[in-house]
Length: 167
Image (cartoon, rainbow, N blue to C red; front, side):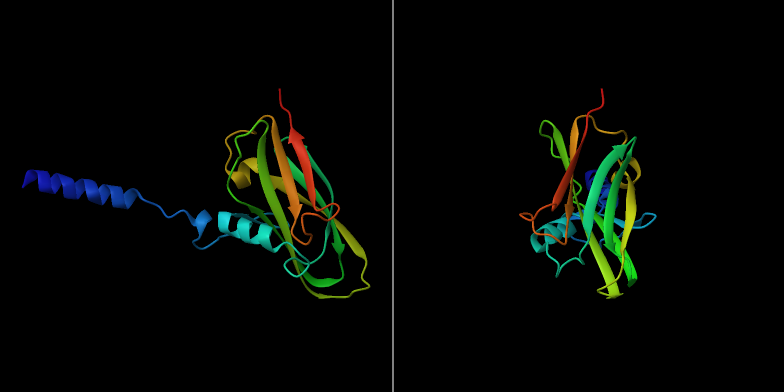
């Protein structure tokens, strides 16, 4: 009887310690940034990568990407005469362990009630990589690729890269 109780107790501890990995298909909960929502989700990333177009994401341009300390600054330009603008930064949760390492992000814009003749607005999405990606330190020799979800990969300026070369 004692081995049965121990086995039952061990089973209860194992079940209690299990957690669902929401990055692969549960409820995708955004982490709010100053002017964007950050998602760590393999399923959202795969969907965004497969759906890249102006039908999937409202049009915008990535005008610059740079890295300062732990902050990935993504400069965007878009029609600023919309009733609402929302940016989503989507990461699949993977650090590709090649040399150099690679981390891929996709940025999607959702806008409503835009004046097609509106003026362009410039904005910077400041992504704190340690905070949003849960990294303990900034990875060295890493290439960050930032993709524009409103453009198919073959279009000009669809993807922008920046390389971290810490020594």
